[in-house]
Figure (spheres, rainbow, N blue to C red):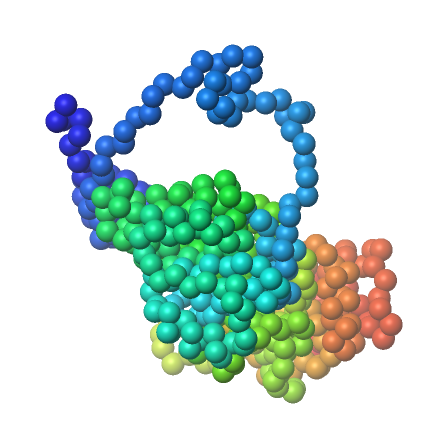
Length: 463
């Protein structure tokens, strides 16, 4: 009997949650070194055997399998957060009974954003509970005074004991609960330290059950690792309904709220915010905002249009090509994949005759946005060629299209949305794949220029 109750010691990877019976230096799952942490696991007490299955039901009322045709569908009940950019990322509003994970770097503004959501909900007569395991009530009060006026419907609970938190939630039944952060919560039934893999996993499971049983929406804040992933096991992202990442430079003004998983809406939607002394301010026209401050007649500057979910965004791509001071030329990219930049430079050298192999090259997407979409290929090629030839392009030019290894320009999706966004901001010439011209009507005052090959485009521009 004593052997059955013996505490088991296992090792968990702090990066990905991989479990091992012994300590190993390198995690076989994620390949990280020195990430295995020792944790004690108590044996689980098995429940009694289930009741007898009679006439499609169990005696104790547990769920039984049902035919898929007998399941009735109904629209999810949504509540507006009071911030249109947050509603866009969530797919139209906050879904009742869902669990949302918000991740981001320290100091990026996760707590400020959710506190603003709490302010709008409580002012709209919704009951909200804000649970903080990192800050005191006075610290939260100081931040709330900068954001605006809060209703008495917002309750603050500075606690890390999960049993006390669940007892208050089940007794008060608030409509929304914010957990700040999940790494500070502690479940006494789990024999591990707060922030460990076991604690995060079991605590999230308990909160998920409460959200589904009581039809309460729960937002949990998660810290991220140096690589940008939520600290703790990957299973945490699989358990929740929605995963949001708050991106941007903590010293900059721009913040991007990105949806990477959403069971109630589309993924890859983004919301754009600006940080000021009073908190986060939503940016309703991000294309104009991201192009503000663009230099005139600058070499290596080209505007392109990317799609973030259903939203077209105009962004400025900057390139700088110069003589190298080292034996091996440097290549650096900010906001896009450096391997893609190297590939496009090889295409320009082979297909367009540009000698770039001995030059340093730097590519930057202004505004702090990270984009890895094939539609930016044509604009990156134009920016690199403009800097190489030391010849600025016109201020009224926008370009998008995928570039292949033969230098051909391939079609991309949602062509009309990109053209309309460029026209809305006053661009008069749009370079796009020649195959995308079929069935596309140019807006008034906009000239569409079809491109078949990068070499042909560069030759025409030189003329």
